[in-house]
Length: 347
Image 1 (spheres, rainbow, N blue to C red):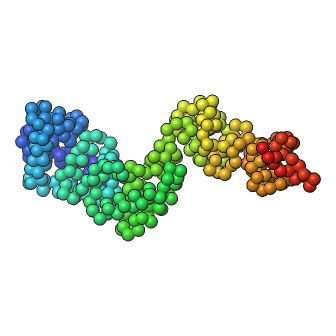
Image 2: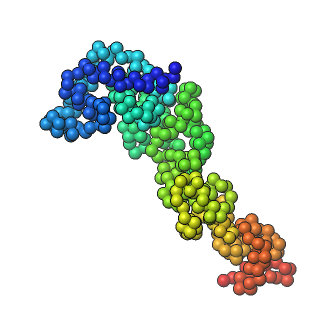
Image 3: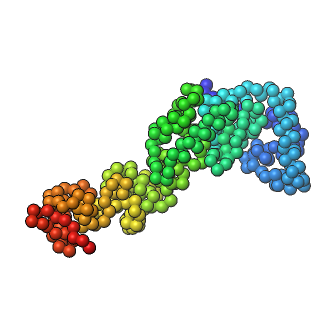
């Protein structure tokens, strides 16, 4: 029987028995604060205080008293098996895990999740770090392991910028270089994914690539960001009509053809390389119309023959050879010397 199966469904029964050791008001306060009743909504200190006509601070005192009373009770000791099961589960999931990941792993039922959260608060083995600028709410058992994972995550995103996109296998491999001294039983892909999920700074886009959350390549906000991901996935120039279709297919976002084309034109991440064909600038394609590409080729290589120019321009643009030749005949931009080589006219 898996750890997940052995604990699923039991927490509510355990919590009911533990709450049974409390006076009515203390039980009611914990039930409201942790969402342990029929309605799994968690209540604020203020809302509970209004119910009893007491201050927020008094509610907090009752809450702390109730938790302390449960932990001193004989019933708490009787539930050791459940706390051991929960500890084994947390350990099997990596020893440190984001709260939302742990609770959703156990059950999709909100009331069961609330009961498990309450047991985590009660259990002596469990430690919680609250959400901060770098990490989500997370639970762990070992201080030493938690510190190593936190440091490794920070090192990981310190080496990334908004332009970086890393495959899942590569991000796992990079992360493992920062946690070489942890026990080998943690060095599994599913555990590393959970550790990565703790971070609020790095994340995964819909195509499974990792990078900084701040990057539009991870947190796509508009058509041009989705278009960028489409082209990266395709790996070669693609017509803007196909870009629009792919955005709808891959991301379920409505993408009008005209709007997509306009976004591609305006964004420097894309280069028009043929009639309606776009490539990513990061692939090394030269920007500009055909005559601009010819000029850049000549600026880079010096005077060239017609065939040499055609060959180099075709590596940059999906156009007909005749289009290149026609542009070369324009004396305003290009001139041919006695050896039949072309050079650019100074403008």
